[in-house]
Image (cartoon, rainbow, N blue to C red; front, top):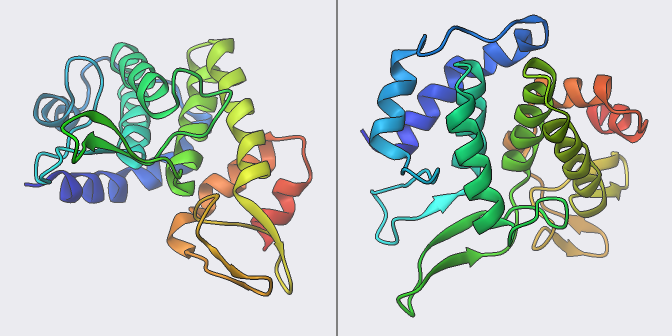
Length: 214
């Protein structure tokens, strides 16, 4: 089964879990056999989720964010930290407080392994914030919570716009979705409502309530 189908099935199951995670305790170690299988098939030893079905053997920020969420559900902090570290070092040039993660990394045409597209992806950024925020709470780790807060502020600055008729609205990425002064391209599938509800309840900035409402 290809990585994309594994991720689709995994998110279908886990979106419901995200609704109740705020009231839950971490699961017992290795409580989720499917997660163990996913790790062995798709995650490298250094924490990169690899799509072997593509010629570039690429990694996308969505897969990294989902892997962090899956690791949190399984109380697998070791894998969580590895995936987070790889993401920060390779998709954010070593600092997730300074920039949103690039959405695509892999084997480039010049035979180098590096970022393929520096643009970020909103859905990945939202899932990463959620995973970090809940990891900070459930594992009592202030570093995760601080990183979640920093990414949240950056999403507001770089991936939102005040659209006529919608007010504050989240864009799929910082670049390429404002078509003209009066036209934007939106993608509702990048807006998981449970994550927006969580952000609007957790973050002190009232803009998140407006974003969830829009």
